[in-house]
Image (tube, rainbow over all chains, first blue to last red):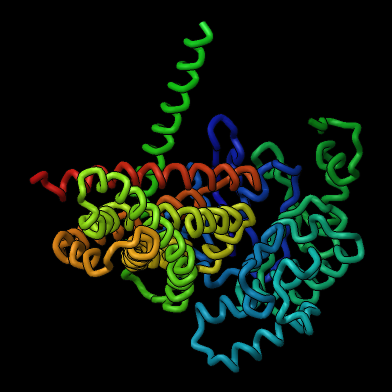
Length: 248
Length: 265
Protein backbone atom coordinates (compact mmCIF):
# COMPACT_ATOMS: atom_id res chain seq x y z
CA UNK A 1 0.00 0.00 0.00
CA UNK A 2 1.23 3.50 -0.83
CA UNK A 3 0.24 6.30 1.51
CA UNK A 4 1.02 9.96 0.93
CA UNK A 5 0.46 12.33 3.86
CA UNK A 6 0.37 16.10 3.54
CA UNK A 7 3.18 16.26 0.97
CA UNK A 8 4.65 19.70 0.26
CA UNK A 9 7.31 20.66 -2.27
CA UNK A 10 8.46 24.05 -3.46
CA UNK A 11 11.15 25.05 -5.98
CA UNK A 12 12.19 28.62 -5.23
CA UNK A 13 9.00 30.68 -5.29
CA UNK A 14 7.02 28.03 -7.10
CA UNK A 15 4.77 25.87 -4.95
CA UNK A 16 4.45 22.53 -6.75
CA UNK A 17 2.89 20.23 -4.15
CA UNK A 18 0.71 21.86 -1.52
CA UNK A 19 -0.53 19.18 0.84
CA UNK A 20 -1.08 16.04 -1.24
CA UNK A 21 -2.87 13.20 0.56
CA UNK A 22 -3.93 9.82 -0.84
CA UNK A 23 -3.70 6.07 -0.45
CA UNK A 24 -3.16 3.55 -3.22
CA UNK A 25 -4.25 -0.04 -2.58
CA UNK A 26 -1.97 -2.96 -3.45
CA UNK A 27 -2.55 -4.61 -6.82
CA UNK A 28 -4.55 -1.75 -8.32
CA UNK A 29 -3.93 0.43 -11.37
CA UNK A 30 -4.08 4.04 -10.22
CA UNK A 31 -3.67 7.02 -12.47
CA UNK A 32 -2.75 10.55 -11.49
CA UNK A 33 -3.94 13.05 -14.06
CA UNK A 34 -3.37 16.79 -14.27
CA UNK A 35 -2.09 19.55 -16.48
CA UNK A 36 1.33 19.48 -18.08
CA UNK A 37 3.76 21.13 -15.68
CA UNK A 38 1.25 20.72 -12.86
CA UNK A 39 3.51 18.65 -10.61
CA UNK A 40 2.51 15.09 -11.58
CA UNK A 41 6.04 14.01 -12.41
CA UNK A 42 7.34 15.72 -9.26
CA UNK A 43 4.78 13.76 -7.24
CA UNK A 44 5.84 10.55 -8.97
CA UNK A 45 9.52 11.28 -8.22
CA UNK A 46 8.56 11.58 -4.53
CA UNK A 47 6.81 8.21 -4.69
CA UNK A 48 9.98 6.72 -6.19
CA UNK A 49 12.19 8.33 -3.53
CA UNK A 50 14.03 10.44 -6.10
CA UNK A 51 12.99 13.69 -4.41
CA UNK A 52 12.89 14.69 -0.75
CA UNK A 53 9.73 16.56 0.27
CA UNK A 54 9.87 19.88 2.09
CA UNK A 55 7.37 18.33 4.51
CA UNK A 56 4.98 15.40 4.60
CA UNK A 57 5.69 11.73 4.01
CA UNK A 58 5.51 8.92 1.49
CA UNK A 59 4.92 5.54 3.15
CA UNK A 60 5.22 2.31 1.17
CA UNK A 61 4.08 -0.82 3.01
CA UNK A 62 4.80 0.85 6.34
CA UNK A 63 8.22 2.26 5.40
CA UNK A 64 8.64 6.02 5.28
CA UNK A 65 10.67 6.95 2.17
CA UNK A 66 11.08 10.54 3.30
CA UNK A 67 13.25 9.46 6.27
CA UNK A 68 15.34 6.81 4.54
CA UNK A 69 19.06 6.89 3.90
CA UNK A 70 20.66 5.75 0.63
CA UNK A 71 20.97 2.10 1.65
CA UNK A 72 17.34 1.74 2.70
CA UNK A 73 16.14 3.65 -0.38
CA UNK A 74 18.13 1.31 -2.60
CA UNK A 75 16.65 -1.70 -0.80
CA UNK A 76 13.08 -0.50 -1.32
CA UNK A 77 13.74 0.62 -4.91
CA UNK A 78 14.55 -2.97 -5.82
CA UNK A 79 10.81 -3.56 -5.41
CA UNK A 80 10.04 -0.87 -8.00
CA UNK A 81 9.88 -0.91 -11.76
CA UNK A 82 9.90 2.48 -13.43
CA UNK A 83 9.01 3.53 -16.94
CA UNK A 84 10.26 7.05 -17.57
CA UNK A 85 8.64 9.50 -19.96
CA UNK A 86 11.16 8.99 -22.77
CA UNK A 87 12.04 5.47 -21.69
CA UNK A 88 15.42 6.49 -20.22
CA UNK A 89 17.07 3.48 -21.83
CA UNK A 90 20.86 3.49 -21.55
CA UNK A 91 22.20 4.69 -24.93
CA UNK A 92 25.36 2.65 -24.66
CA UNK A 93 23.53 -0.66 -24.13
CA UNK A 94 21.50 -2.73 -26.58
CA UNK A 95 17.83 -3.51 -26.05
CA UNK A 96 18.70 -6.89 -24.48
CA UNK A 97 21.47 -5.38 -22.33
CA UNK A 98 19.06 -2.71 -21.06
CA UNK A 99 16.58 -5.36 -19.93
CA UNK A 100 19.38 -7.48 -18.47
CA UNK A 101 20.81 -4.52 -16.51
CA UNK A 102 18.65 -4.78 -13.34
CA UNK A 103 19.02 -8.57 -13.38
CA UNK A 104 22.80 -8.32 -13.52
CA UNK A 105 22.82 -5.72 -10.76
CA UNK A 106 20.43 -7.32 -8.32
CA UNK A 107 20.25 -11.07 -8.89
CA UNK A 108 22.67 -13.96 -8.78
CA UNK A 109 21.25 -15.50 -11.96
CA UNK A 110 23.72 -17.07 -14.37
CA UNK A 111 24.25 -15.47 -17.77
CA UNK A 112 22.11 -18.13 -19.47
CA UNK A 113 19.29 -17.60 -16.95
CA UNK A 114 19.47 -13.83 -17.49
CA UNK A 115 19.33 -14.37 -21.25
CA UNK A 116 16.23 -16.51 -20.79
CA UNK A 117 14.48 -13.90 -18.58
CA UNK A 118 15.37 -11.15 -21.06
CA UNK A 119 14.00 -13.23 -23.95
CA UNK A 120 10.77 -13.84 -22.04
CA UNK A 121 10.31 -10.17 -21.02
CA UNK A 122 11.03 -8.91 -24.53
CA UNK A 123 8.55 -11.43 -25.92
CA UNK A 124 5.92 -10.13 -23.45
CA UNK A 125 6.26 -6.61 -24.86
CA UNK A 126 6.57 -7.73 -28.49
CA UNK A 127 10.24 -6.86 -28.90
CA UNK A 128 11.53 -10.25 -29.98
CA UNK A 129 14.03 -9.90 -32.83
CA UNK A 130 15.27 -6.46 -31.73
CA UNK A 131 17.60 -7.65 -28.95
CA UNK A 132 20.82 -6.38 -30.51
CA UNK A 133 19.59 -2.94 -31.56
CA UNK A 134 20.59 0.20 -29.69
CA UNK A 135 17.94 2.65 -28.39
CA UNK A 136 18.85 5.13 -31.14
CA UNK A 137 17.97 2.49 -33.77
CA UNK A 138 14.38 1.85 -32.62
CA UNK A 139 11.17 3.92 -32.67
CA UNK A 140 9.66 5.80 -29.71
CA UNK A 141 7.03 3.10 -29.21
CA UNK A 142 9.67 0.37 -29.24
CA UNK A 143 11.74 2.32 -26.72
CA UNK A 144 8.69 2.51 -24.40
CA UNK A 145 8.08 -1.22 -24.80
CA UNK A 146 11.71 -2.00 -24.07
CA UNK A 147 11.57 0.30 -21.03
CA UNK A 148 8.47 -1.58 -19.86
CA UNK A 149 10.31 -4.90 -20.27
CA UNK A 150 13.20 -3.46 -18.21
CA UNK A 151 10.75 -2.15 -15.58
CA UNK A 152 9.21 -5.63 -15.29
CA UNK A 153 12.52 -7.52 -15.34
CA UNK A 154 12.77 -7.99 -11.56
CA UNK A 155 9.05 -8.81 -11.18
CA UNK A 156 8.52 -5.66 -9.11
CA UNK A 157 5.79 -5.09 -6.53
CA UNK A 158 5.09 -1.59 -7.81
CA UNK A 159 5.54 -0.17 -11.33
CA UNK A 160 5.55 3.59 -11.87
CA UNK A 161 4.74 4.95 -15.33
CA UNK A 162 5.60 8.56 -16.16
CA UNK A 163 3.54 9.61 -19.20
CA UNK A 164 3.80 6.19 -20.85
CA UNK A 165 2.23 7.27 -24.16
CA UNK A 166 3.50 10.83 -24.66
CA UNK A 167 4.67 11.42 -28.22
CA UNK A 168 3.22 8.18 -29.61
CA UNK A 169 0.76 7.76 -32.46
CA UNK A 170 -2.80 6.58 -31.56
CA UNK A 171 -2.23 2.98 -32.64
CA UNK A 172 1.02 2.66 -30.66
CA UNK A 173 -0.72 4.35 -27.69
CA UNK A 174 -3.44 1.70 -27.76
CA UNK A 175 -0.79 -1.01 -27.99
CA UNK A 176 0.99 0.38 -24.90
CA UNK A 177 -2.27 0.53 -22.93
CA UNK A 178 -3.09 -3.03 -24.03
CA UNK A 179 0.36 -4.04 -22.81
CA UNK A 180 -0.22 -2.30 -19.47
CA UNK A 181 -3.53 -4.19 -19.12
CA UNK A 182 -2.03 -7.54 -20.12
CA UNK A 183 1.04 -7.32 -17.91
CA UNK A 184 -1.08 -6.18 -14.96
CA UNK A 185 -3.45 -9.09 -15.38
CA UNK A 186 -0.50 -11.50 -15.30
CA UNK A 187 0.76 -10.26 -11.93
CA UNK A 188 -0.54 -8.76 -8.68
CA UNK A 189 1.63 -5.72 -9.23
CA UNK A 190 0.55 -2.22 -8.22
CA UNK A 191 0.66 0.15 -11.19
CA UNK A 192 0.85 3.91 -10.68
CA UNK A 193 0.50 5.91 -13.88
CA UNK A 194 1.01 9.62 -14.35
CA UNK A 195 -0.54 10.98 -17.53
CA UNK A 196 -2.66 13.68 -19.11
CA UNK A 197 -4.05 11.30 -21.71
CA UNK A 198 -7.49 11.01 -20.09
CA UNK A 199 -9.21 8.60 -22.47
CA UNK A 200 -6.25 6.25 -22.59
CA UNK A 201 -5.72 5.99 -18.85
CA UNK A 202 -9.45 5.61 -18.15
CA UNK A 203 -9.27 2.42 -20.22
CA UNK A 204 -6.75 0.82 -17.84
CA UNK A 205 -7.33 2.43 -14.44
CA UNK A 206 -9.10 1.10 -11.38
CA UNK A 207 -8.91 4.54 -9.84
CA UNK A 208 -7.99 8.01 -11.08
CA UNK A 209 -6.89 11.07 -9.12
CA UNK A 210 -6.66 14.60 -10.44
CA UNK A 211 -3.81 16.78 -9.21
CA UNK A 212 -4.69 20.43 -9.38
CA UNK A 213 -2.98 23.41 -7.84
CA UNK A 214 -0.68 21.17 -5.80
CA UNK A 215 -3.52 19.13 -4.25
CA UNK A 216 -5.66 16.13 -5.12
CA UNK A 217 -8.81 17.81 -6.39
CA UNK A 218 -10.82 14.70 -7.24
CA UNK A 219 -10.53 10.93 -7.13
CA UNK A 220 -12.67 7.97 -8.11
CA UNK A 221 -13.17 5.24 -10.67
CA UNK A 222 -13.14 6.40 -14.31
CA UNK A 223 -16.96 6.31 -14.28
CA UNK A 224 -17.09 8.41 -11.11
CA UNK A 225 -14.62 10.89 -12.58
CA UNK A 226 -16.77 11.23 -15.72
CA UNK A 227 -19.67 12.30 -13.47
CA UNK A 228 -17.58 14.39 -11.05
CA UNK A 229 -19.42 17.68 -10.44
CA UNK A 230 -16.38 19.98 -10.25
CA UNK A 231 -16.20 22.16 -13.40
CA UNK A 232 -12.38 21.98 -13.45
CA UNK A 233 -12.51 18.17 -13.58
CA UNK A 234 -15.21 18.25 -16.23
CA UNK A 235 -13.32 20.72 -18.42
CA UNK A 236 -10.11 18.71 -18.06
CA UNK A 237 -11.85 15.46 -19.03
CA UNK A 238 -13.71 17.01 -21.96
CA UNK A 239 -10.66 18.97 -23.11
CA UNK A 240 -12.80 22.01 -23.77
CA UNK A 241 -11.02 25.39 -24.09
CA UNK A 242 -14.01 27.02 -22.33
CA UNK A 243 -14.20 26.88 -18.54
CA UNK A 244 -12.33 27.65 -15.35
CA UNK A 245 -9.01 26.27 -16.67
CA UNK A 246 -7.20 28.97 -18.58
CA UNK A 247 -4.63 28.18 -21.24
CA UNK A 248 -1.33 29.95 -20.43
CA UNK B 1 33.85 56.02 -22.30
CA UNK B 2 34.22 53.17 -24.77
CA UNK B 3 37.47 52.17 -23.10
CA UNK B 4 35.70 52.10 -19.73
CA UNK B 5 32.94 49.88 -21.15
CA UNK B 6 35.56 47.61 -22.70
CA UNK B 7 37.45 47.13 -19.44
CA UNK B 8 34.16 46.84 -17.55
CA UNK B 9 33.10 43.97 -19.83
CA UNK B 10 36.44 42.27 -19.32
CA UNK B 11 36.14 42.66 -15.54
CA UNK B 12 32.64 41.15 -15.59
CA UNK B 13 33.85 38.21 -17.68
CA UNK B 14 36.77 37.60 -15.35
CA UNK B 15 34.51 37.84 -12.29
CA UNK B 16 32.04 35.38 -13.84
CA UNK B 17 34.80 32.93 -14.70
CA UNK B 18 36.19 33.14 -11.16
CA UNK B 19 32.69 32.64 -9.72
CA UNK B 20 32.10 29.56 -11.95
CA UNK B 21 35.51 28.21 -10.97
CA UNK B 22 34.82 28.67 -7.23
CA UNK B 23 31.34 27.13 -7.54
CA UNK B 24 32.69 24.25 -9.57
CA UNK B 25 35.53 23.65 -7.15
CA UNK B 26 33.03 23.44 -4.28
CA UNK B 27 30.76 21.05 -6.16
CA UNK B 28 33.70 18.93 -7.25
CA UNK B 29 34.91 18.65 -3.65
CA UNK B 30 31.45 17.43 -2.61
CA UNK B 31 31.51 14.93 -5.48
CA UNK B 32 35.00 13.83 -4.42
CA UNK B 33 33.69 13.09 -0.91
CA UNK B 34 30.82 11.07 -2.33
CA UNK B 35 33.16 9.25 -4.75
CA UNK B 36 35.57 8.28 -1.96
CA UNK B 37 32.63 6.98 0.07
CA UNK B 38 31.31 4.85 -2.84
CA UNK B 39 34.75 3.70 -4.00
CA UNK B 40 35.05 1.32 -1.06
CA UNK B 41 31.46 0.07 -1.02
CA UNK B 42 30.41 -3.05 -2.94
CA UNK B 43 29.53 -3.98 -5.60
CA UNK B 44 32.84 -3.35 -7.36
CA UNK B 45 32.11 -3.10 -11.06
CA UNK B 46 35.52 -3.92 -12.56
CA UNK B 47 34.11 -3.89 -16.09
CA UNK B 48 33.20 -0.21 -15.70
CA UNK B 49 36.76 0.57 -14.53
CA UNK B 50 38.21 -1.26 -17.53
CA UNK B 51 35.90 0.59 -19.93
CA UNK B 52 37.00 3.94 -18.51
CA UNK B 53 40.69 3.00 -18.37
CA UNK B 54 40.40 2.14 -22.04
CA UNK B 55 38.46 5.30 -22.93
CA UNK B 56 40.50 7.83 -20.95
CA UNK B 57 43.86 6.07 -21.21
CA UNK B 58 44.34 3.66 -24.09
CA UNK B 59 42.34 5.71 -26.57
CA UNK B 60 44.39 8.80 -25.71
CA UNK B 61 47.74 7.14 -26.42
CA UNK B 62 47.91 8.08 -30.10
CA UNK B 63 47.02 11.72 -29.41
CA UNK B 64 49.50 11.98 -26.54
CA UNK B 65 52.32 10.48 -28.65
CA UNK B 66 51.71 12.89 -31.53
CA UNK B 67 51.40 15.92 -29.22
CA UNK B 68 54.49 14.93 -27.27
CA UNK B 69 56.49 14.32 -30.44
CA UNK B 70 55.74 17.76 -31.88
CA UNK B 71 56.28 19.47 -28.52
CA UNK B 72 59.73 17.87 -28.23
CA UNK B 73 60.58 18.85 -31.82
CA UNK B 74 59.63 22.47 -31.16
CA UNK B 75 61.54 22.52 -27.87
CA UNK B 76 64.69 21.26 -29.61
CA UNK B 77 64.46 23.95 -32.29
CA UNK B 78 63.68 26.75 -29.84
CA UNK B 79 66.34 25.45 -27.46
CA UNK B 80 68.87 25.53 -30.24
CA UNK B 81 68.00 29.14 -31.12
CA UNK B 82 68.47 30.23 -27.51
CA UNK B 83 71.47 28.12 -26.56
CA UNK B 84 73.52 28.48 -29.72
CA UNK B 85 73.92 32.16 -28.78
CA UNK B 86 76.00 31.01 -25.82
CA UNK B 87 77.57 28.00 -27.51
CA UNK B 88 75.61 25.74 -25.18
CA UNK B 89 73.94 23.43 -27.75
CA UNK B 90 75.18 20.45 -25.76
CA UNK B 91 72.68 21.35 -23.01
CA UNK B 92 69.61 21.05 -25.23
CA UNK B 93 68.91 17.41 -24.24
CA UNK B 94 68.89 18.23 -20.53
CA UNK B 95 66.83 21.38 -20.99
CA UNK B 96 64.20 19.60 -23.05
CA UNK B 97 64.07 16.68 -20.60
CA UNK B 98 63.65 19.00 -17.62
CA UNK B 99 60.91 21.05 -19.32
CA UNK B 100 59.03 17.93 -20.31
CA UNK B 101 59.38 16.09 -17.02
CA UNK B 102 58.67 19.02 -14.74
CA UNK B 103 56.00 20.91 -16.66
CA UNK B 104 55.02 20.15 -20.21
CA UNK B 105 54.49 16.41 -19.83
CA UNK B 106 51.90 16.55 -17.05
CA UNK B 107 50.31 19.89 -18.05
CA UNK B 108 49.95 19.28 -21.79
CA UNK B 109 48.84 15.66 -21.29
CA UNK B 110 46.15 16.88 -18.91
CA UNK B 111 45.00 19.60 -21.32
CA UNK B 112 44.84 17.10 -24.20
CA UNK B 113 42.89 14.62 -22.07
CA UNK B 114 40.46 17.40 -21.10
CA UNK B 115 39.88 18.11 -24.78
CA UNK B 116 39.45 14.48 -25.77
CA UNK B 117 38.02 12.63 -22.77
CA UNK B 118 36.91 15.37 -20.33
CA UNK B 119 34.59 17.01 -22.86
CA UNK B 120 33.19 13.60 -23.84
CA UNK B 121 32.52 12.75 -20.18
CA UNK B 122 30.63 16.02 -19.68
CA UNK B 123 28.59 15.52 -22.85
CA UNK B 124 27.80 11.87 -22.05
CA UNK B 125 26.81 12.42 -18.41
CA UNK B 126 24.96 15.64 -19.32
CA UNK B 127 23.00 13.80 -21.97
CA UNK B 128 22.24 11.01 -19.49
CA UNK B 129 21.03 13.56 -16.94
CA UNK B 130 18.78 15.26 -19.48
CA UNK B 131 17.21 12.01 -20.68
CA UNK B 132 16.49 10.64 -17.18
CA UNK B 133 19.12 7.92 -17.52
CA UNK B 134 20.79 9.00 -14.26
CA UNK B 135 17.42 8.92 -12.48
CA UNK B 136 16.79 5.53 -14.09
CA UNK B 137 19.99 4.25 -12.49
CA UNK B 138 18.97 5.59 -9.09
CA UNK B 139 15.48 4.17 -9.48
CA UNK B 140 17.03 0.74 -10.17
CA UNK B 141 18.87 0.97 -6.84
CA UNK B 142 22.21 1.63 -8.54
CA UNK B 143 23.92 4.67 -7.05
CA UNK B 144 24.78 6.96 -10.01
CA UNK B 145 27.94 8.29 -8.35
CA UNK B 146 29.21 4.79 -7.77
CA UNK B 147 28.31 3.58 -11.26
CA UNK B 148 29.19 6.64 -13.35
CA UNK B 149 31.53 8.94 -11.45
CA UNK B 150 33.83 6.65 -9.44
CA UNK B 151 35.15 4.60 -12.44
CA UNK B 152 35.84 7.78 -14.43
CA UNK B 153 37.64 9.54 -11.57
CA UNK B 154 39.69 6.47 -10.69
CA UNK B 155 40.59 5.80 -14.33
CA UNK B 156 41.68 9.38 -15.07
CA UNK B 157 43.69 9.60 -11.85
CA UNK B 158 45.49 6.33 -12.61
CA UNK B 159 46.17 6.89 -16.32
CA UNK B 160 47.28 10.52 -16.31
CA UNK B 161 50.78 9.77 -14.89
CA UNK B 162 51.25 7.07 -17.54
CA UNK B 163 50.10 9.42 -20.28
CA UNK B 164 52.44 12.13 -18.93
CA UNK B 165 55.35 9.66 -19.04
CA UNK B 166 54.42 8.70 -22.58
CA UNK B 167 54.22 12.37 -23.52
CA UNK B 168 57.68 12.96 -22.06
CA UNK B 169 59.15 9.96 -23.85
CA UNK B 170 57.57 10.99 -27.19
CA UNK B 171 58.84 14.51 -26.63
CA UNK B 172 62.37 13.25 -26.03
CA UNK B 173 62.19 11.16 -29.20
CA UNK B 174 60.99 14.20 -31.17
CA UNK B 175 63.72 16.41 -29.72
CA UNK B 176 66.39 13.76 -30.39
CA UNK B 177 65.28 13.43 -34.03
CA UNK B 178 65.50 17.19 -34.57
CA UNK B 179 68.78 17.46 -32.64
CA UNK B 180 70.46 14.80 -34.72
CA UNK B 181 68.71 14.90 -38.13
CA UNK B 182 67.88 18.58 -38.59
CA UNK B 183 70.49 20.30 -36.43
CA UNK B 184 73.21 17.76 -37.26
CA UNK B 185 74.37 17.38 -33.65
CA UNK B 186 75.77 14.30 -31.95
CA UNK B 187 73.07 12.06 -30.41
CA UNK B 188 75.41 10.89 -27.65
CA UNK B 189 75.79 14.49 -26.43
CA UNK B 190 71.99 14.77 -26.28
CA UNK B 191 71.70 11.58 -24.21
CA UNK B 192 74.59 12.51 -21.91
CA UNK B 193 73.05 15.90 -21.27
CA UNK B 194 69.83 14.21 -20.16
CA UNK B 195 71.79 11.89 -17.86
CA UNK B 196 73.66 14.85 -16.36
CA UNK B 197 70.70 17.11 -15.68
CA UNK B 198 67.57 14.99 -15.27
CA UNK B 199 67.06 13.61 -11.76
CA UNK B 200 64.55 11.06 -10.53
CA UNK B 201 62.90 13.77 -8.44
CA UNK B 202 62.08 15.78 -11.59
CA UNK B 203 60.12 12.84 -12.94
CA UNK B 204 58.39 11.91 -9.68
CA UNK B 205 57.30 15.50 -9.08
CA UNK B 206 55.90 15.61 -12.61
CA UNK B 207 54.04 12.38 -11.99
CA UNK B 208 52.57 13.65 -8.72
CA UNK B 209 51.31 16.65 -10.66
CA UNK B 210 49.79 14.34 -13.26
CA UNK B 211 47.89 12.42 -10.56
CA UNK B 212 46.45 15.67 -9.20
CA UNK B 213 45.58 16.86 -12.72
CA UNK B 214 43.82 13.56 -13.46
CA UNK B 215 41.77 13.95 -10.30
CA UNK B 216 40.89 17.58 -11.07
CA UNK B 217 39.92 17.07 -14.70
CA UNK B 218 37.81 13.99 -13.98
CA UNK B 219 36.03 15.54 -11.00
CA UNK B 220 35.22 18.77 -12.84
CA UNK B 221 34.11 16.88 -15.96
CA UNK B 222 31.94 14.47 -14.01
CA UNK B 223 30.48 17.28 -11.91
CA UNK B 224 29.63 19.47 -14.93
CA UNK B 225 28.03 16.55 -16.76
CA UNK B 226 26.32 15.03 -13.73
CA UNK B 227 24.51 18.25 -12.85
CA UNK B 228 23.95 19.57 -16.40
CA UNK B 229 20.41 20.79 -17.01
CA UNK B 230 18.69 22.69 -19.80
CA UNK B 231 18.66 20.17 -22.64
CA UNK B 232 21.06 20.25 -25.56
CA UNK B 233 22.00 23.89 -24.94
CA UNK B 234 22.64 23.20 -21.28
CA UNK B 235 24.88 20.26 -22.12
CA UNK B 236 26.78 22.40 -24.63
CA UNK B 237 27.28 25.16 -22.06
CA UNK B 238 28.31 22.65 -19.41
CA UNK B 239 30.88 21.17 -21.78
CA UNK B 240 32.37 24.56 -22.63
CA UNK B 241 32.49 25.64 -18.99
CA UNK B 242 33.83 22.31 -17.84
CA UNK B 243 36.70 22.43 -20.31
CA UNK B 244 37.53 26.05 -19.43
CA UNK B 245 37.27 25.55 -15.67
CA UNK B 246 39.26 22.32 -15.54
CA UNK B 247 41.98 23.85 -17.74
CA UNK B 248 42.16 26.91 -15.47
CA UNK B 249 42.23 24.79 -12.33
CA UNK B 250 45.02 22.66 -13.76
CA UNK B 251 47.15 25.70 -14.60
CA UNK B 252 46.47 27.27 -11.20
CA UNK B 253 47.18 24.06 -9.29
CA UNK B 254 50.32 23.59 -11.40
CA UNK B 255 51.61 26.89 -10.09
CA UNK B 256 50.75 25.98 -6.50
CA UNK B 257 52.41 22.56 -6.75
CA UNK B 258 55.46 23.99 -8.53
CA UNK B 259 55.86 26.57 -5.79
CA UNK B 260 55.58 23.88 -3.12
CA UNK B 261 57.78 21.26 -4.78
CA UNK B 262 60.59 23.04 -6.54
CA UNK B 263 62.76 25.14 -4.29
CA UNK B 264 65.01 27.62 -6.13
CA UNK B 265 68.63 26.56 -5.81
